[in-house]
Image (cartoon, rainbow, N blue to C red; front, side):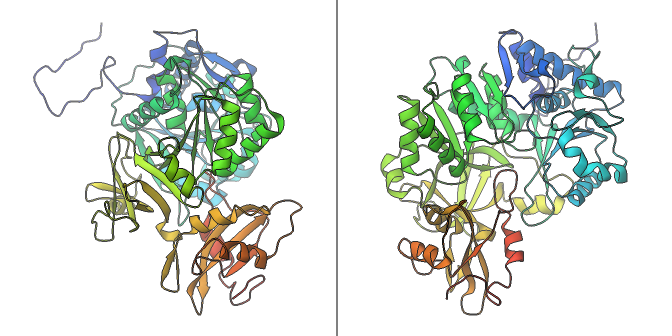
Length: 561
């Protein structure tokens, strides 16, 4: 028996690293093996797994597969703290790889497959991963980067292509490895994951997430996702939005295991497939994403009327849901359905929450023009401060910056002390999000600070203008930006993706806005585009639009003064 030392003297400065007391994200599956080992833990919607044996896994099977990942890495000479890069869309294999890396005391370094090759090469040079697991469909885009950097390809997840020559499949990678728990010391403050921010203004920053922060955030969301259920272990939660390289893994997957429920993972956002999944697996909670995606799902439900009466909770973010969409969802889901709006970011994912059912008058009066985000989670302290750091709570309508503190807040930006010092200061994490409060101190998301348009001495919320434009039947997608203008300083400008077959003019869209917005908020011009440049979370890379249309009012193609 291994010799152990139990400190029964010191009351401060302790480190909970013993197996019986530690906090580790890698343990979320293992704990359930002592309760319901044969209950289904993870289901892959078709397309979200390469090997059919991963289509459905019990808690015991999922835990053993994650152990095999950990033990394989250790056998190859990887050590705790080593980074393992993942370039994967949603899959059961990619998800098990993340949990296996956590079990090994190593650090998952998942990257968005849509990143440019030069950005990926920069991140490899900065974070120095020791190996990578890659989706087959992603390999052609980054093969040259692997050649230039010499980064070893550990395994291929054979979705969208064959196993890369000279590599092995994920199943072959873990074959024969021990299914037992790896023997490694882990502390809750250890970093287990580097998630790279959207990079809307510069190279992505590596957000350092600890076992503690992810565990706290997941437990907080377990409370929200199990609303309406008689027993929390009856939770069946589904997500088709990214969870490998996006912070959505914390609130919408680990929370499921902390509830003793079942997780369904889909690959790629498709309202038709989501609706089918809801009916097939009797899903009780869904991460719905943006208002546009939720509206598309609602429209499909209206057209096909599948049985989704099991659905109790739908979580949305990045904007307000129109009341008509909520009414449609309530008709299909039935009594007891709850719509929950969230507002957060990678660095602090406990989130604000807004429930239309709690504030119905506010919701009916303001949505979708105003993005009410409600109140912070009970495990998240949040203030809204002006440029001097003074709170604007109790000052309705005065914009400020949302700041946070609590156990879910990230530990910093990896190898970036300057950015860390700037964001984590004065005892708070400074989000860069502009908010204001109403008479009851309910928070309203105004905009990202850098996306507020300063036009003619007025501050214009791009989110508010976008919400109005989304109300036009010809608009599929829209981003509102400020562009240089001799008269206005910055001119409010709409960049619009029209719906297929739709015909609409700039003048018609500007008139639509003029009827619903103040004059200074109304766009001075409209540019049409085939597609908007997006981040993984569906946020528009507005700096790319500002660069592309920088001379719009010098050589305009579609505008009015």
